[in-house]
Image (cartoon, rainbow, N blue to C red; front, side):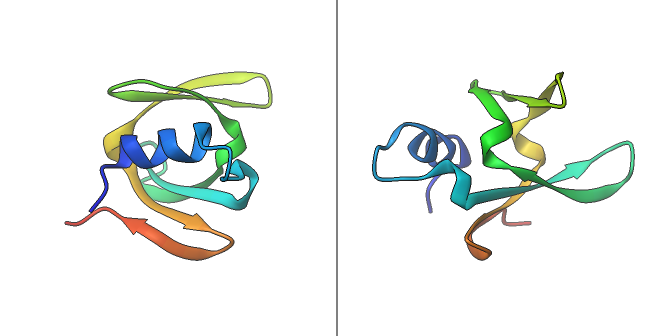
Length: 81
């Protein structure tokens, strides 16, 4: 299985990929629920965090909170429990 950081970088940098086709599902600790995020909102990918910008608000989201990655609604990656 591919590591999530490697998958995120592939989506972002591979010219054959289209980031707008991807959705990320991550765990929100405040709301204690999973939330969807368009891949286009990811501005930077670090070793531990992704920098997300939504409505001019920047958030550092820990990579370990990512639960799923979907392409055109189809599951392509899921964190194993």
